[in-house]
Image 1 (tube, rainbow, N blue to C red):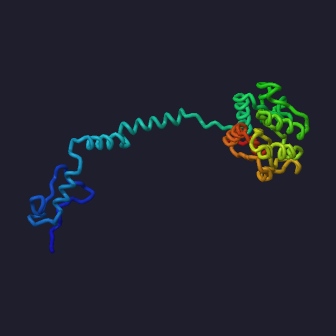
Image 2 (cartoon, rainbow, N blue to C red):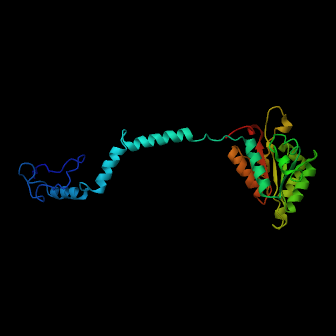
Image 3 (tube, rainbow, N blue to C red):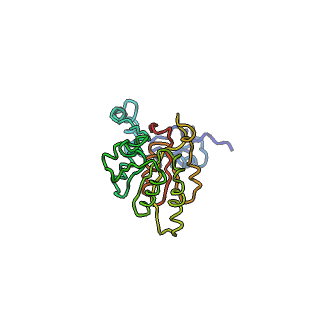
Length: 273
């Protein structure tokens, strides 16, 4: 079988609109009067019929898009102006330190729920040892932001009792190393009460404070208790890194009906994210 070359156009160049195939099915011979391959004329005809007709909306849209979005087209110029405007007018991302994120979370929760209050050593007039509670005492007063004596066992017991009575205390330790002084209240009074009461008594309390190593505070103030408390049934332990996590996790912990340990890494109080 010796067929002459079919009259189909190459794939890269579609046939003219309305063109018909040649050969046996198209009514003419392929090349200079010979017969084309069987089906070649039908394929060419289908190609021509399937394509958009000249002057159709599809053709007009293609022509418009090809000219409008060319490097010199009007749409390209408008797009470039828009991108430049966004670049000039968009505000820079706000950088928030972990300290400020925690302060915002406490402020928002104190304002949202009257049952929330903060107590601990130097949290009121001194604004906290790491200034986490800056400005809260002036805004909410002595009933909501309470300075305590240096007696972790005592004020932790007060906080746990308040939680059992329906309040939502945030009990702050100057560092989590000092929570060892109140370990009986944390483990036996707060963590186990929900289980021991068959769920009838909730203890919605947050134990919060800096945790882990820091410069110049010696070994007694440099221990990390996150994993240790994580092995105590009844406690939820969170240890955020970024400012976003710090704020969101503190708000979620305050609203949770279970006791939680909110350990803040000392070294990242000034880290912005």
